[in-house]
Length: 388
Image (cartoon, rainbow, N blue to C red; front, side, top):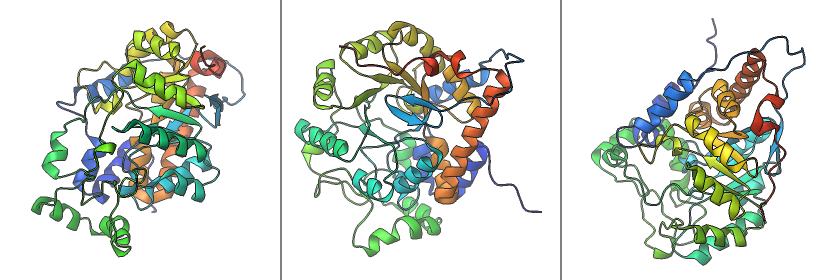
């Protein structure tokens, strides 16, 4: 009997764990410190309930929506994840193609291996959003923003919840970083995953290079074997609202601020002209005392009163998780780990299949709950407009 293909988050994750070096796997999978935030998001999503409604008609649920001017088949955006190109060769291109086939936008990380122009050339139909980690040289940061706009990035997504680099003990122990620490343990980890090394590392070696941060300036790109050494591209996130306002002033497209948790910060985001926010615990990877995103949404949505789009991320494993975030007021969600596990398990087809399962689960959850788009306040609201 032919075994059934993977369908659940747990199945995709299990295959990815076998195929990836442990350092790469842990970088994606683990949280921070005692991993309380990681567990808290999962516990609250599992505990949340929705009272189902019956006899709501026979029409299939409408999942298609528009967020910040981007039309999408469902309220799901592929979250920005650094180094997806280390999960699979040309990982960002494969992810963008899988998302485009399903009608979903992909948010590209500043720290991706493949730069936006290469993705645009390979997947011209992709709806691309651009995540932003600011550099020490503000003009270089603004230059990256202009470049992203020129390549058709529809939404800029500055990440605000990482004021300093986050220490992750398991990454340090396994030598994972840019650059890798090549210890006996690291080399054994790679050697035990030779097919991964042949797919991801060997092609770069044959071209005379190593995987690197593709958006960094030529000559200043950190690689698997070399740190940048260029202080201009040092990690320098915005430290105050004036810095975010300067980004707003220089970005003519839609602006989505990622990592907002406090209602007063959400209100300030609206006041400076942001078009939306992402309520996020950074997937449990930053501040271990962060409340569960599901608990934060009602107060934040109430505070902004529909003036801006409110999205959510962290902990999404199942279509029912998506519905729970929508039911709590989100206009849409970002999903990061699930498509990465699909990519690691079966390449582009795996990413597409994992995301397709997520869409199917969301549709089934909407049918079984009796909830229509009009019942979900964030999805039902008109597209957010810039606040003057």
